[in-house]
Picture 1: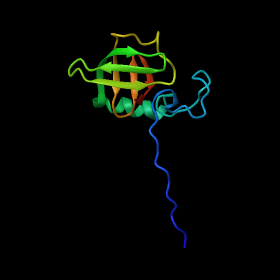
Picture 2: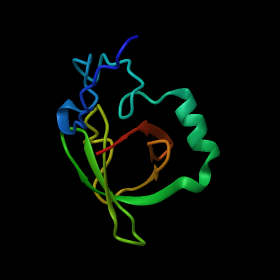
Picture 3: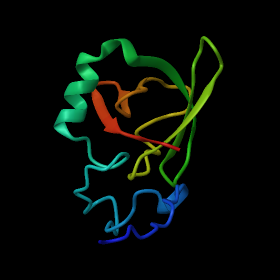
Picture 4: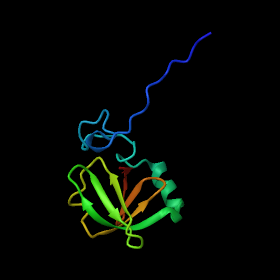
Length: 117
């Protein structure tokens, strides 16, 4: 009879280490983990679950890939992360949309995978 070994608890990592296993830079990254490349199924599911999109305003963009958005209706702030720094592609004060279920940020016609930070 075998016994179950205790597993160590999973660690929740934030910041630069978030989801970066195996990635040296965003330029060469081919990962589909949250905050990296947008998987086709993720994009499709976000498009059919239209009621989960939230219109938000960008309140901060960091060089580490963090973006803070604020709902204009509730003033609730949400912080998300994308592997590629988005300075220059997303501007403070810009209206964007955030899909709260599938982790997709819509910047104009562009869709980006984001991870909750």
